[in-house]
Amino acid sequence: MADIESTPEITKADSATSVNEDIDKYRVVYKGTSGVGLGKNIVFIASDHEYRSEESLPALARILAKRYGFTCTVIWALDDKGYILPGSSNLRGLDVLDKADLMVIFTRFSDFTDEEMQHIDNYLKRGGPVVGFRTATHAFHIKNHPNWAHYDFAYNGPMKEWNKGFGKIVLGETWVDHYGTNHKQATKLVIDDAQKEHPVMRGVKNPWAQSGAYLVHPEKMNATVLARCEVLNGMTPDSPVDTTKKPLAAAWVRTYQLPGGKSGRAFATVHGASEDLLSKDFRRMTINAIFWAAGMEDKIKANSNIDFVGPYKPTTFNFDGYKANVKPSDLAGWKSLIMPGEVVKLKKGE
Image 1 (cartoon, one colour):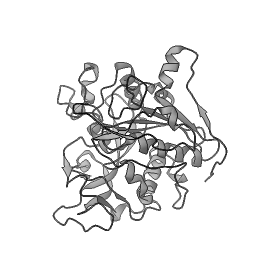
Image 2: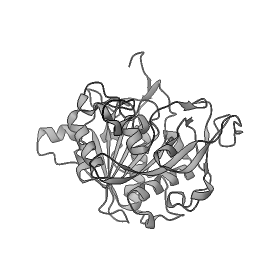
Image 3: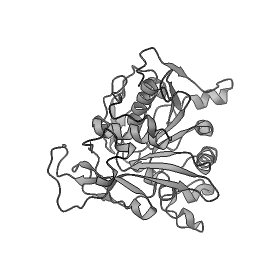
Image 4: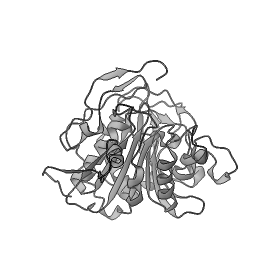
């Protein structure tokens, strides 16, 4: 695969008007110049409260852009000063989904505006491929935009096909519960014997994640489970297995279809926290999954380059604080640090 060493072309959406200039502050585009992904557009949506998607998604985007030529647009939720605010629903710029070849989503309890939700809905109705990380099973909690109530993770209304919302109908599962003690029990991912030759697992040997397991059963939604979790009694990969917990799904694939829409591919994993990407095998699985979802499984190589692009120093996932006073533009280019800033503790109620 190509390893582009030249300075990246960091592009912005058309900013001919003040409206578009305002939207541009929410997003950064990493544009590769050669590789098997040239001409393909991937959109990454980052806004969860705990697992530092604001760090992990740009790290993946830079790998895919520089090493494979994709054009990767990362979109963050912001505060009223233009700084990244994890878990906020103040997110704009999803119009890029209109021409996207893949959507990667890592949000939690989001409640985006009608305009932004319409772009997501249009994308899904055309069967656009989806990759969802961890809290994407409960990506939406709709309080202020009733037109999209059916996207809510707990939806139980008249649109029966949408029972339990976006997570269930697209990824195959919604939020149920943690499985084990999060922050105290890490996870070893064990590849299913029947799926060791699946393209997503090509070159993947011993993935593990610091984030804990989830109580999920995507098999009930016709998903193919690629790997299952072994809950560990500790936070290192060599921690002993918790033998009281049977393995549950950790990563899976399925075909989704919205009512009246076209079918599309989906990959989901209950992991993906910032430090999970430090596991090279987990990182390879996620890169492979993006290729697979985009219909490019023939381009997946067991030894492809998945090294980070630029410095990646992830913040330990937590609810209490995050790297504050960082704007999307601070993460532009190949060499910017992910993540700059200082951890700021959140005040109660924030």
